[in-house]
Amino acid sequence: MDDTTAQRRKPTIRDVAAAAGVSRGTVSRVINGGHWVSPDARVAVEDAIRETGFTINHAARSLATGRAGSLAFLLTEPQHLLFADPTFALLLRGAAEALTQRQMTLVLLVAGTEAERANVEHFVRAGHVDGVLLISSHEADPLLERLVAAGVPTVSCGLPLGHQGEVATVSVDEQRSARIMTRHLLDRGHRRIAMIAGPGDTPGGKYRLVGFREELGAAFDPALVEEGDYSQESGTAAMTRLLATGAEFDAVFAASDLMAAGAIAALRKAGLRVPEDVAVAGFDDSGLAATHEPPLTTMRQPWELISESMVQLLLDVIAGGPQREIVLPTTLVVRESA
Image 1 (cartoon, rainbow, N blue to C red):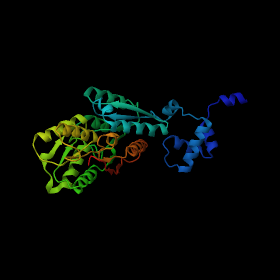
Image 2 (image 1 turned 90 degrees about the horizontal axis):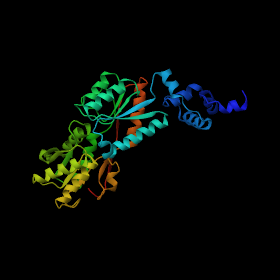
Image 3 (image 1 turned 120 degrees about the vertical axis):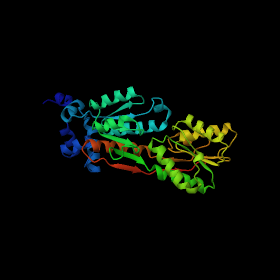
Image 4 (image 1 turned 90 degrees about the vertical axis):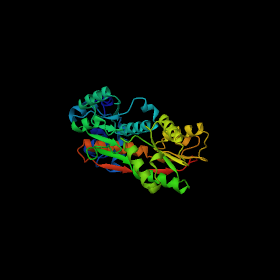
């Protein structure tokens, strides 16, 4: 082979292995997710890939493995929420970055209507993706049940109500997180604490309310609980309903930062000050909390770790691993609103 031919030849796994000083099997494991590879070997392979200019032949790998080399980011909500709720954007970005590192592709799927659910089910079952990152779930949504019945590898963000144990999950400790926030408000001297809960058919809506009720104990008043759908508009509407009852409260815990922002708007419209008259706390710390006026006290979710954990867990399931449940901690972030 002359020099010109050698320059035109595409680098192979053999070339990468030689440059990294490892076996071809080690290179293959790094390319396919890094299972059972030491950190030093992984770094050596990644450096060798850059040095040699090696690229994966996805078409050939798909034919050889029967896999698509892509995962679905599935949002079972109305399309507008993908842009209105910053938590979805954070998870989308994190999942995309995690797959880019593995030279895989992320496919965005939205299934907020029955027609969209049917299209998504057909697309996924046709093998266009290797598995599903389920970003939101509702207890009565039939799509998850269909995915489980079809044997589609799936990882749920948050406990999938009605389907616990059927799919792998990555979640935060919703109940304990809500107790921590409620305790913070109690420790600040607040005694009449209201809550704007999320939808009761979602894990965040259900378990954050449970934690709030448990921490308050005998001080819990069901008349001080309203429900929203995590949106800012629903937070405004829920606070307006609370104010209309004439009930007295000196603090409110909203199950999302967006609902907390909406609650503050309603309080201000009613002539009340935050936090002087009513303290307000949220949940998520998705970016809005730090820039809001006043800045929101909230429970921070580890967004990057959630995304990375979901991707790795799904790849493990696809490879035949167990359907594990990963629970990640949250962090109380105290700012001016409470």
